[in-house]
Amino acid sequence: MKRIKIISTALIAIVLMSGCASNSSKENTVSISGAFALYPLVVKWSDEYKKEYPEVRFNISGGGAGKGMADALAGAVDLGMFSREIAQAEKDKGVWWVGLTIDAVVPTISNKNPFLDSLKTRGLTRAEFKAIFIDKTITSWNELLGGENNSQIFVYTRSDACGAAGTWAKYLNGKQENLSGVGIYGDPGLAEAVSKDPVGIAFNNTIFAYDVKTGAKREGIEVIPIDINENGKVDPEENFYESFEQILQAIANGVYPAPPARELYFVAKGKPQKQATLDFIKWTLTKGQVFIKEAGYVPIEQSKINNYLKKLQAE
Image (cartoon, rainbow, N blue to C red; front, side, top):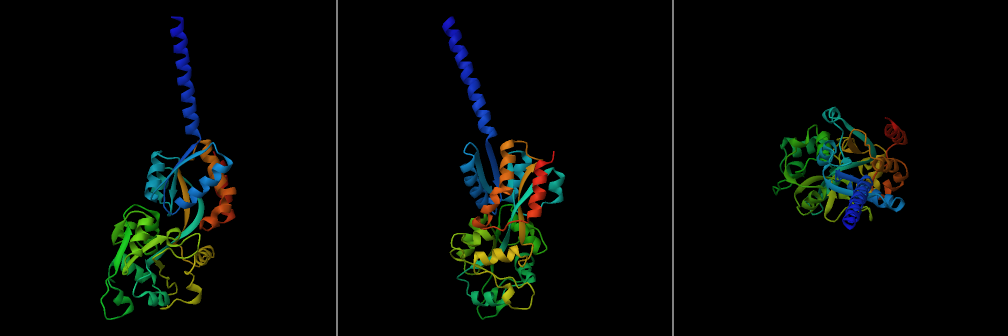
């Protein structure tokens, strides 16, 4: 009987220790899901953060801004990655947010497009993009650029609820559900689809249209200049698409229109309570900001960062 009691006591101790370890692991794990636009930066941040705090673990997954918001509001993750303006309906559900950085959505085509030279010289106006993506009143490249061969415009959009589509649609005075075209899941998939279609058109987050390491456009991708002043040509001050550095500078200077330039966020169901989550957010807004440009994004203003830090400290 004595031996059985000793064994039972030992087993209880093991179970209790296991439970404590499990709780400790959970408290030191930060789960994040959502926008593809923010995913590369958050992965970079997590790698750098673990160098300083190796006890912290991260579970990070993409899936689009819609998934990030839904997961956050359901409490399925600690933080959602979000990449469009936060709607009043989402605020009414108790969403809490902090801004982190800025990027943009750009209109994309294949570098094999037969009208490429004309497009890079002329650009397209917002009204023309709207006619292609929403109104469907322009359906061929010839209608825009002339020529004898009737080359249909093959439109691609996102099949997942996402900030890129919502932001691009807002620029065209619509919503994501108003965008026409073949739905493709995820930013990487959309970039691949349009790069392989010589008569296709799409839109992508800058991080998926350009290569961060080389600064050049990704293989097979070209970016259509926006004729901002609508004078029928791409003026020198509108011509900033050849390198990642150029377009990031245009976004930072406010030259590239907003939208499709936009702020990117972390969202949660109310202010996060887990200390590991709060500590990570604070780090991204302070020490983590040094990695913004390296990862291919634009920093937000210091005054905004200060306001978000105050929000973190508020009860």
